[in-house]
Every structure is written in structure tokens, then in C-alpha cells.
Length: 143
Image (cartoon, rainbow, N blue to C red):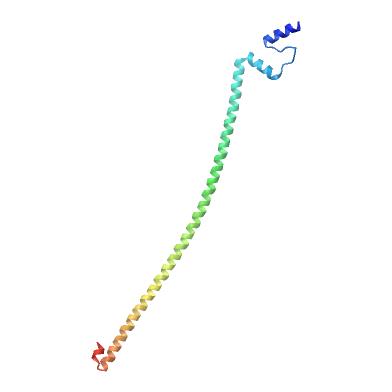
């Protein structure tokens, strides 16, 4: 009689007395008895797992983008420092070039003044020689 009862329960998809039914087997049988509800629950579970997976992937992507942004910000800051150093050096070089040009102009002015003074002294010497030659009645030298 117990065997017939167990066979009837087995055909009905209910637990039998011969051995206890494990949890996974009970779940499987419940899914077979309620296919619409089990499919709906499976879709909900898959949606939750898929959504969580998608969120996690986007989180990892955001972390990577943040790391890239930090790296680019650091590179930009370093480039700005390099630019500022180069600009300061260019200003220093320009000031040195300006000072050098000013010194060269001053030296040129001094050289031009000395040239004029030399020409003036030469002209004065020529006049004095001509005057001396005129006074000594040496007309050929006076020319």
C-alpha cells in the first residue's frame, strides 16, 4: 500500500515517503507545477542580476574615466609649469638681449663721438700745419 501511495504521489509531482526530497528538487517540481509564475520570477531574478551587472560595469568604466581625467589634469598642470618656466626664461632672455642692445648702442655712440673728435683734431692739425707753412712762406706745403 505504501508503494502505491508513493507512486501516486510521484505521478502527481508531490513528495514521496520513500526518501525525502531535496530543496533543489522541490524547487524544480514547484516550477513545473507553476510555469507562469516561475518564468516571471526567473525574469525578475535575471533582470536584477543583469541590472546589477550593468551597473557594476558602468561603475568600473566611471572609475577608469576618473583615472584618465586625473592623469590628464596632472599632465596639464605639468605642461603649465613647463610653459611658465619657458615664459620666464624667454622674458629673462629678452631682458638680456635688450640690455645687450642698449650696451651696443652706447658703445656705438661713444665710437661715433670719438670718430668725430678724431676728425676734428685732424682738421685742426691740418689748419695748424697750413698756418705754419703760410707763416714760413712755404706755399706748396700750405695747400
